[in-house]
Length: 345
Image 1: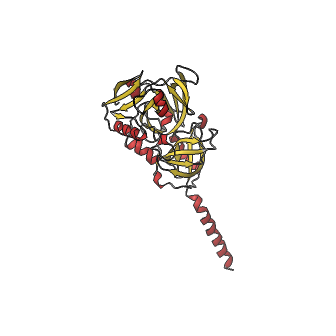
Image 2: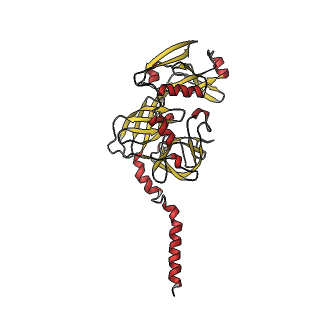
């Protein structure tokens, strides 16, 4: 007569044991989302660009995502979402919209920090986690605005992690999580959360044949983002550029083997105040679209642009400058070297 109760008790214990692994995050994704969703923002940008097969500038608008990380006014996002744009607006879950500007950016890691014109009415601040503790196989979720549809959720796992300068040479400083969580255009800059609701990464880009989410998603680890734009506060120039060397450098008659071809310049940025000229002639070079006709940066603070390592040295030199300090840039313009200068905001 005592055997049946024992088996019943054993069955209950086993059932509870099986349920425990799911209980780690099993507040449930939906419940965690409710807590963190108000901290996620949609970022809309306006700027000017050269349309294909045209000369002159045309207006453009962009959409990305971000996450509020301070009760006052700081939002973490991807550098490519906000670099080189003229206007930035941030919209919260309750519909409140606030203008913003870039205060720190590291294009080589695709992370940026923007500052709101004023604090939101009801700030919901995200908690930054420790991405060093994240393991391959951990469940994660991403919240953002794919194709402009704000506060969309996608769930997946950490598929791999990549050390800096192992995925893209153009993003040499970025430490990446690779994920199978669906990422589309508009997700860029949005947060990746662990199942505790902590931010562990910032969405950067996807590798996809179609441009859709069936490709591989890459997310910059939050520890790397924290180091570059919070602790160190990487200097924001307000310009975007592409490295040129070899035959293209020779065709442009550069006086040195390599340089940085200016593509876009944001209004009211240090680059604009300095008088840097952006490109305006769209061409295709080795399968990539670039804009010619703008300045080519030869030296910054006396450091000659040669490759990614010299670019790192230039960025470090700029990061050390205090507010009000002069910035000296030598550009190749109209067949000769021209000296430009501005002051750190």
